[in-house]
Length: 639
Image (cartoon, rainbow, N blue to C red):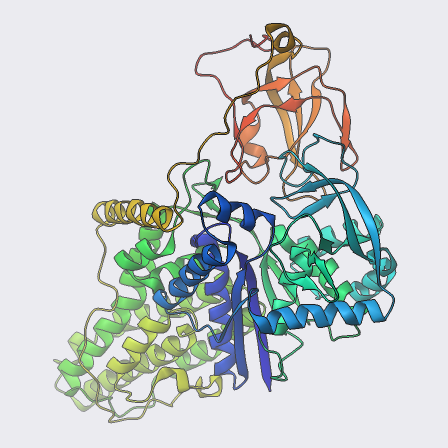
């Protein structure tokens, strides 16, 4: 049987960072687990290389779009190789095979009457590749808050409006089609509002896959990119995907557009979509504007890739937002890996060398510990199956604690000096129990810690690869009595926090500089302020100091926040701002901000916005709010 899973097809507007690594590490973990279960597991990732963003970035660097994409695609592929991830298919949307699959999908949809030609005139967000039908010229994107562009062009449209009830029927028939439940509820709310037909081609850009018999049309980036999941395994009998693993910000495209396209083409649907949360850096959203994006390779160079894998899957509840910090990373490494698993492996195997001549002792082990191991094994495999990685690892470390306590209570260093038949029997039982528990723990941890588990496996004395082990081998007593151990060495040497963090930060700076040079970039250039206005025009803009009283997420949007801002009026202003990608709601309460107070009110996601919050950003950065070094009175005017 097969198990086909995918990561997002990463957009080539940036080089890989820890956010990309998070999703791909989780996918690699699932792939290894499914292989251990005897399935033919195949993992696809790749790069999404078309669209106006890519075209503009290439021009800005004096490159052709293809040259630009070649650099970024190679960077992603090299990243996964450096991190030791088991990628089976790396598909680029610029490949000929992919182009043919996209064109075939379009023809199937058109033949069935779900595609028609029309004209689109309205607003488009180049950052989210999103048509904003309800927006007016100059309005911000409802997702990211950046200014939309006005476009007028002949397009092909997909009859998305005809799929509202079909999609709702799908979600009802397959409650686990979208996971976790919070993402499912968001999608249900979005679809229940009604769906509008979707433009799936562009005529205002050249960089894209051409539409059959319509050379001036190229495909809209999402119709193009989503098809990569099929094109990567075309002709291999692996479709449909068993799991699409994605970030929560792109759940609408995967859970609404993608199944609608496939329904229209009469093609099988993926079985499950799981959207995980964001990684925050010390509780703030990672973003270019904040300068707090972290890359994976500096961490791997200092602590090893397995340390990063363990931290991400243990510290963060998969499906929710989670926080990353260097202090927490080193803390987890030392407490759980060095002092926990590493110490258990080192002292167990060292004592067998010392007291048993390096051979697994002749014993069946302790029945209570065997029972505990069986219970933890069943629980951990169940948690892994539900993608509850943190709970699975917590259960496994619970077993480490159990066997550690068992060793301390039995005190094999004392039993070795007993000199009696009974003490020898107790010694053998203690050390076999510890070694067999270590074997089971090592196999359970292989999907999460593949490099480290392989080292411990070899030290236990096995010559065949741990990757060949099946989950059915996770039963007590499979460790052969008399088996000779390998040489013992520290798998997780304890890390000095200060030195390790300083080294990771230094390497992070080097890696950032290298990636920027690779992309032909330095610091983001500010847009030239070449349009002059008179002082009278400036005075028409009423900017005020405000205090954020309330802040909450906007239902149906991952990028909008709804703020209530006190500017000294009878009641606070309702302001909808596209800053959720950079700020968590609770971090804004009590913060002073600057707003434009005399804008005409407008509706965003059904909420009235009575002004605009002032923030700085470039085309490549998240917004950064304007703030005050001194205490500015509420309601004071900015002049």
